[in-house]
Amino acid sequence: MKCPYCLSAETKVVDKRDSDSSTRRRRECLSCEKRFTTYERIENANVTILKKDGNRESYDRDKVKIGIQKACEKRPVSVEQIDEALDIIETELRSMGSTEIPSKKVGTLIMKMLRKMDKVAYIRFASVYKDFKDVEEFEDELHKLLKK
Image (cartoon, rainbow, N blue to C red):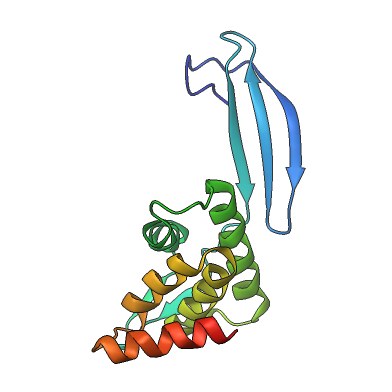
């Protein structure tokens, strides 16, 4: 592993944490002594997302992450919480046992995770994902959220 600061190949692992679908390693460069984090996770190259219009697209973790980050913008949600949510979403997708998963299922999983993390982020994501046509639909979703 090369140091992202000085590009030295001499690094050591100072901490390692395993989760269900990834391994986080905290590393220290032996040359410049700076620390950085690396993640090792299972590649989801064989998962295909079936879009609403019938098109198929390879699962893209970064695309899901960007959507979650936009919903969580200026909210008290850490990068670690987002990465953990992504890991849980991917674990659930893999456990479905299918190589083709409807985009609706992915969106539902994202909303489920956002609802637990931050209700404002959940509403932001839901307003785009569910494509509210008017204020009444938005209010209905808020009422559902407050009832639970």
